[in-house]
Image 1 (cartoon, rainbow, N blue to C red):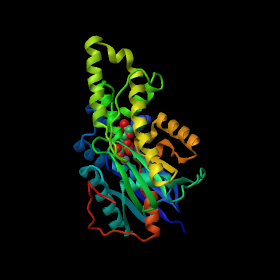
Image 2: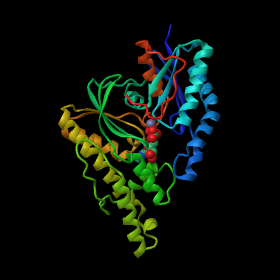
Image 3: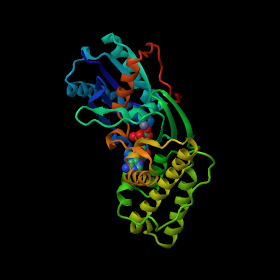
Length: 339
Ligand code: KG4
Ligand code: ZN
């Protein structure tokens, strides 16, 4: 008999359900919320409302693709936090109701640990090598920018973190300043591929140790555009590719400088990346090139497992199921959940 875990992710603006069977991913359905694009960022109230509309169809679809009925699910894993409280509440309440009615165990997953463990999500017909412990994860998303020392599946330590904005926020906020849509990261990524990344210079922050800062870059970016527009009103339109390329290179240099320092300080050269910004083509290429040069062993996940998804939650839930790490029905979501 197979062990089937249903995973639920609803921490931000993606409603997702996935099924992992005996450790292999057999379905992963994601409903992204277009409603936020008009606002240049996620509107929490709209996000929780959209989760409420999406959650049942998304779960139905995930079960259908997995060709399983509700009573063939052995446990349900859900994202307890960190994230937006109203969004987390929808997934948590759904998971509790499902666990109660199907009389199966409930498993809580930390969203960030989920991103780290997305490395261990395998499709049956596409097996990959797992990174050996310990390894370093560069987790870069719209809400987080961290370097995590991963000692075991659920034994992780944050050794560097942003002191202000996340890397994804830097992409999104700068895109908003340029009048591009939301999320800005993929749009900047596209323009950057056509531009000259040395066209403009933005100063990098000087933050000690393994911590990051992106708020100064955002301000420098804003001031540069303001000064250039004063001279050339159509500056953004005329230089969009070069602006995006220069900005993106600066963000990636900031990330890689700290990663190099982390490798030096820990002596660990096995590296994984996760979070939405890990979908960035230049970050992926530059990291691979650095790895080849420095003899690092990097594990770069497929793009669909970098942004928010329930596959990583169901995968983490599978390992917790094997350890019988279940939670009581009284569990509540935690917007600032730590590990
Ligand atoms: O992990 P994620 O889906 O949600 C959070 O937990 O935040 O990450 C979303 C973030 C957004 O800031 C988005 O702009 C960024 O990931 N992102 C990218 C790319 N694709 C998504 N940033 C740069 N380049 C990309 N290709
Ligand atoms: Zn995330």
